[in-house]
Image (cartoon, rainbow, N blue to C red):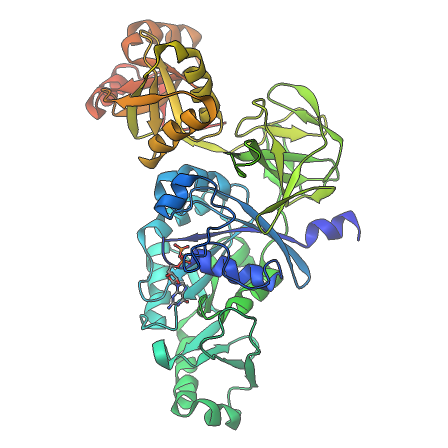
Length: 525
Ligand code: GDP
């Protein structure tokens, strides 16, 4: 297979959904199709009491939530799929946002009984920043759901994206009969209780086929009448609009019953974009370029408790990774030789020989890699757009054993480079302030400081309620600001100047008083 063919067959996507909509279940089924798992049911395995391979911290296990982001690669028909998992808990949304910069399309899973929910709205906003193409799966049709037309209307109204139904559901709940495929003119009949296997689904060709009436009785005529309405009232699938993020193909089914998932995968195979280029500080880099480039969107510790290491997840933007190759790390302007990158086959790690644009590789990180880092084949540029978000929660962190100040600082800086948390050091005192987007991050930090740095730390209240990175083109004005506002200034983990405000009122006043200073809510790495 040629280089271009290798790249073109790749599909790199993530699932966006509200908790409980069925992301884990659909991931299991998708892996089942990829033959990555013999029998679905080991990703989270709530029922069997087994824990997912991607669950790495005891804390996660105790709380039954999935915090980490992991990567799964599997073949499906002509394509090779990379599925990037995202943390289910909203306290780790920063990780999710950054993961969404590393995909080329998204699968939106909606609980058809509930419709569009809060977290889906938020995640859709993030995908809009890059106009990422969205495929939609209406899940849980084996339950009493909302009316299908209502669901499409809601997606169009709330998420502001056109819906093109590709399949249409017949009945729901106990009476769920299957779906009709509008493009293939075929009806697929659902049998319950087959969720753990790839079922032999009965298909009936042609909407007017009398077989259909025999199979589903009165539902057949109802379907025919309904389809006229649907065809008149909804959008037809249009590939250009899909690629532009303006229209989403919609599939109906049940992840638990493993029904309809393959229709969605066929859509991904046929329509989802091949690996896309990315913009850099110098120029646009295309996936078809044969020279290697990539960026780090995520750093994760202790993927495997036995290994106790930290892995930097790097999305390859162009070219090909080969074992032992040299890469240029732009931020530190250094050449590094990488001989032990990892790939992630269904959650297992395997040593990797080669990987192509669109793939994610795991680089062992011994402290020299940060989120947002760019690797190239020697060219000096940096990929743009990997965001940091100003934290909304703050605590002072203090040691139980004051002799370990150095380890504490080292640990906090490393954890902030991973994006696990943010750390601020005020200019005027020796406090260490931890900033987080979600409350659980605080617990993770204390647990990891203890486990990895042997540091026993605790939190205290601190009078900070919001933070902004500050920048100013005029050096003199910045210096003046630095002197006058020193009480409220701090350095973050990467030594960037930050304004930490006790109240929003204080922040607003500062913004009024110093109009030449920029107060930034997000910062690109
Ligand atoms: P996540 O939080 O989005 O990962 O959701 P899960 O995949 O863990 O699913 C949440 C709950 O919904 C679990 O109890 C699943 O068994 C259930 N569930 C998922 N898909 C379906 C479905 O198609 N039908 C029904 N009835 N339940 C489902």
